[in-house]
Image (cartoon, rainbow, N blue to C red; front, top):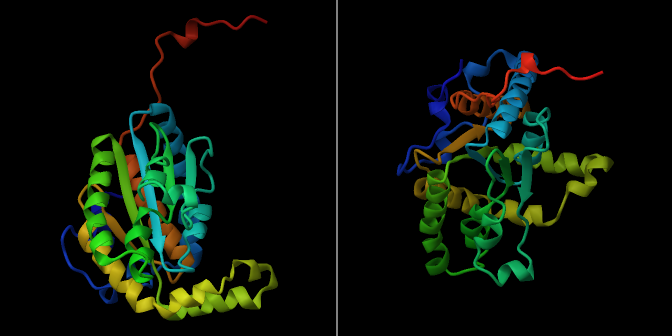
Amino acid sequence: MLTMDSFTQYVVPPKKRISLEDFSSDPDNELSAGKSESKKELAELTERLADLQQRFFVDRRRRFLIILQGLDTSGKNGTIKHVFRAVNPQGVHVASFDKPSTRELSHDYMWRVHQQAPRLGEIMIFDRSHYEDVLAVRVNHLKPQAVWQKRYRHIREFERMLCDEDTTVLKFFLHIDRNTQRKRLQHRLDIPEKNWKFDTSDLIARSKWNDYIKAYEDVFYETSSPKAPWFIIPSNKKWARNLIVARIMVSYLDQMHLSYPKVDFDPNSIHIPI
């Protein structure tokens, strides 16, 4: 059985300055079995994840929040599609955070996020998140530093509160390199069925690559914690990205020792009338 110790190479230690240059965006030798074998393992893990998610749903003692972040084309949607393809949609939901609406902007910046926090028995996946308020807001100079700098503390306290209220919080940064992003953006232009995915704003964000990298490194330093860790997932290879995320998810759910509720009657004593 995989344990949380199996993933230490991906975890950002609390209060440690890291450079993303020290983390490869390609899979390491541990995944040397390659794409074919990894896809077989992923298929097994997604079935296991479906069973664990069902147990988690009926157990209803905890909540689960997954935060997916990454630069454009890093594969947030693809991760959701491939890792969670077998789960029951009754108990797994996705919240996407685009540019805030006028109504959302009239509230504090965490208002729209807290409304999407998971309920007991629910796995909630954030496709982007409150971290945009210390990433995009910072890089695009939407607020002065005096404003966004305070938000690290808000975010730490928000996630600490969720953890104290029986929520497991896992945060995944899908790590790609600049060349991989270029190829994926070009692919969206070359394939007519993919054209709709391309947005000229992607090129603006790409021109600020180094600013985003620096902003993410500060995010990791300020907000990775033992109870709400950041994982840096090598994502140049989609199959490796999906496999690593699936392994981590199954490991965390496995160690919750989930079981179906015990009934207060003897099923053998029940006779269904014809």
